[in-house]
Amino acid sequence: MINLTEVSLKNRALVWYFIIVLVVGGIFSYIKLGRMEDPNFTIREMIVTAAWPGATAEQMEQQVTDKLESKINDLPGIDYVKSTTRDGTTVIHVLLKDDYKGDVRSSWRDVRNFCHDIENDLPEGVYGPYFNDRFDDVYGSLYAVTGDGFTYEEMRQQAEKIRRMILANVKSVQKVELVGVQSEKVYVEIENAKLAELGISPTALSDALKGQNQMTPVGMIETSTDNVYLRYSGTFENIDDIKNAPINAGGRVVRLGDIAKVEMRYAEPADPKMFFNGEPAVGIAVSMEPGQNIITLGEDLGSLMKSVNEDLPVGLEIHQVSDQPKVVEDSIEEFISTLREAIIIVLAVSFLSLGVRTGMVVAFCIPLVLAAVFCGMYILGIDLQKVSLGALIISLGLLVDDAIIAVEMMSVKLEAGLDRFEAACYAFKATAKPMLTGTLITCAGFIPVGFSAGLAAEFCSAL
Image 1 (cartoon, rainbow, N blue to C red):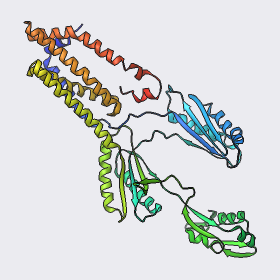
Image 2 (cartoon, one colour; image 1 turned 30 degrees about the horizontal axis):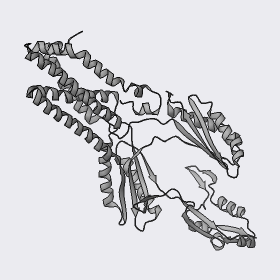
Image 3 (cartoon, rainbow, N blue to C red; image 1 turned 60 degrees about the horizontal axis):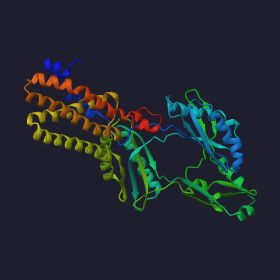
Image 4 (cartoon, rainbow, N blue to C red; image 1 turned 45 degrees about the horizontal axis):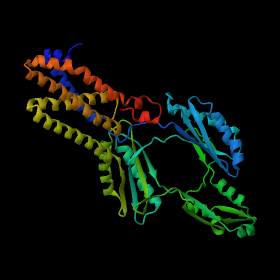
């Protein structure tokens, strides 16, 4: 076996070159490494929903659920399909195999295409199918817009402005979504007795409103110089236009506002609401692009929100609800603190037992090897996150043990009368195989996690 210590001591200039390259490369890689709380992983599940108002659960199952399931089962890589059918609704869960190696997004596109192929075979009146496959969108930063005396719509408008500012000015943002927005609808309410008195059916009333607000193409007039496009006017621009809509009531034309109560209010039942400290709020959820630095993203968002706060109208406020960048920063600080404690403990023990110079050699090994590890992580695309930081902390014990064993063996041989070169070469010859074997045994304990199939293995792949 080649004695690496002997080769290194005979080529000191080359060794120093690689040490400097590793240190510089490690520092550069550490700065460039992505930072996040959890590693990226793919959820191999999609939900397909459809609705058929008025249908029983049996009708829904036979005429909608079974047709969709039969088509979805033709997709390659499907593990199983399960469904829940109730009166008027069906929910179908599509799950891929744990060891499926294809592109998951392409599989979900195939599910969409397969289901759209049989839409004409579904009964008339079926709504959908609708699809949801975005379970892996993680919103690390969440803000709440609150306003004393402001309506939901006014808060939504302000939140929409902030959303656009985030997308335009903050790098590495993948998606920004508003939470707790309440949709508005126009409600036309009229008593049944009045409808009967006027001789108007509810269907005629809705048809009149629908026809009035319909966008109808009229045509185009060709002239010698230009083309003039004609458009039908009269569509509803505001609630007053709806109130002024003409309604034919038994040969008489009346205003809708004279016979019915027309008002705009929030939809009933209400959409999911958001509250912050008991106050109604509209949330702004921000997700980061994969492989980016969430700490940098948090700093950029903090700077933007500081400027946004200064320009908000009086009474409107923006609050931070969740701060994932802070959690990640604390995790990395914990790792650095652990590393610092390890170096201090090694220095103290080494100085007391082996001397100052030997202790410095042992202590220097830890950051040098970590620099090489950071280079490898950067090349392989492994970010600093919960799993990789845990693996680094586990490996610190190996680094400390191996360095102490090698240097102590050399120190023993120096006391036995060997010169420094022979002592160093003997330390490699005597300890290389046992230390390598011990390290491999420790690593082997994590092999089942890395090579098993399923979501857990993908989550822990950085180990």
